[in-house]
Structure formats: structure tokens, C-alpha cells
Figure 1 (cartoon, rainbow, N blue to C red):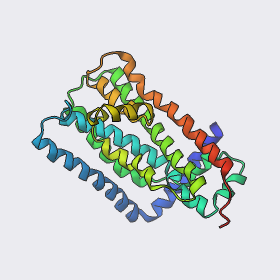
Figure 2: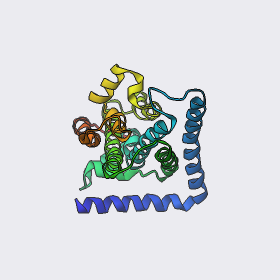
Figure 3: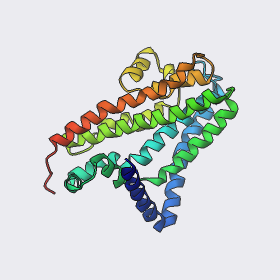
Length: 262
């Protein structure tokens, strides 16, 4: 385990050094990522100028929700970028080299890409989170701080699982499926608001199928005092179970893999 972490750290350092060779390009990419998310923030701001609340949640509470959810997505996208672009590795036959190396496949794919430019999106998420903390009217204590930490950990794991599924499907299709963007970029968009505001059916789907609600809606209720039982703070950790079937699909895809011959 220690050797794997050390190797992954080495992979990351190589990517960071490579990006820093073109500092101007890096700064422009980071700025672009920041501004894209900032446009979403402005849209929410203007909407709440007309409506005082959405589904019982105030502007500050919604901003807090979206800030945490966007940070979860950004962390997963930054770390799991190799799986997000995995189709090119399969299509070009580069996965053949990965399979003959004496290291884990997941570790090597993770280390193949590390997109530090996503820090721009994380910065925007941090700004929204800071504003939400101030305007959300939450009484902060140790359990609520831990809830945020668990939300970030569980949400990052959940999105990592989705990226893993997207990569696994490439073994069967060679190309990444655009429909998977519904569960990544699309989820980032509808995650602006607590999942519960979209209705009971979608809430059930996002609880038992793809657990967005476990890392967003339910722990938010605890943060806001709408749920008082302490066990609600541990709900985001259930999202780690979602990674198990995702990894199972990945393993099935590896066994199915045949070189493209490129």
C-alpha cells in the first residue's frame, strides 16, 4: 500500500512538473475553469433575487450545498482524469502496455492523467462554500464539521466509481459513451440544489441506484438542523459501497479486453 501511494505521488509530481512548463497556459486553463462555474453561481444569484426559497432551502443553504457537491466532483475529476479519458487509451492500444507492467491496473490508469487545472473549479467551490457557511445559518460544531468531511470523502468516492464505470464500458464499446456525461457533468448541474426538491421518485433513484442523495441531500438536512439524529452524519460514508459494483464492472471489462491492434 505504501509503495502504491509513493508511486502515485511520483506520477502526480511528473504531471505537475509537465504542466508548470507552460505556466501561462496553466493559468488560463485554471481561470477558465473558475469562470465556467462562476456563471452557474450568477444564475443562481439572479434566480434567488426573484424567489426567496426553493423547496424550503434559502439562497445561502443552496450555495452551501452546491459548493460541497462541486468540490466533491472537482476532487474526483482531478484525481480520476485517467478514467475520464480512458477511451483513447483503449482505442490506441496503449492499455496493452499497462497490462504487462508489474503494477495494479487501477493505479496505472489513475497515474496516467492528473488534471491540476481543475483547481480553478475547486477554488470556485471553496468560495461558494465559504459564503454558504456564513449565510447558511448553521450552528457549527464538531459533528457538523465531520459531516462535511464525510460528504467530501463519500462524494469523491462516488464520482470516482462513476468514472470507473465509464472507463469499464470502453472495453465493450472502444469509445466512451456520451450518456455517461449525464451522471458526471449532468449531475454537477442538477446538484446545484438538494436532490429532494426534484421530487420523490428522483430522490429514490439518487438514494438506491446512484447515491447522489447520500453525499448531498441527507447530510445537508443534518447540517441545517432539519434532522437531529447523530447517525445522519455517517450517511455519506455509505457511498463507498457504490464503488464495489463499479470495480466489479471494471474487472469484468478487463477480462473482456481485446487489443484494438493500433
